[in-house]
Image (tube, rainbow, N blue to C red; front, side, top):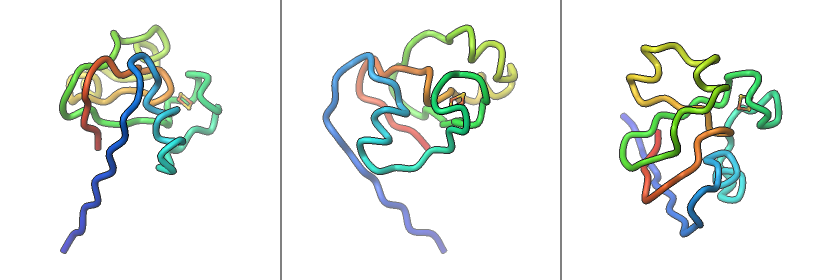
Length: 85
Ligand code: FES
């Protein structure tokens, strides 16, 4: 059995997913404190557009993860309405 809560918030374009999550009190592991070095802040973008893959993401994410929609929350910036897991 599962229960799913959905939180929504209005925000500006170009903010990172990590910054928005912090503001919404959603905890995302970020051992390197959002510097794009640890690769631990993975989120899956299931709908909507986020920024192009950053150099850090290209280095830290496998091709398979990228194809599945995973991004680094500290690097990916929202471009429109997005939905994440
Ligand atoms: S918090 Fe370390 S890569 Fe995003």
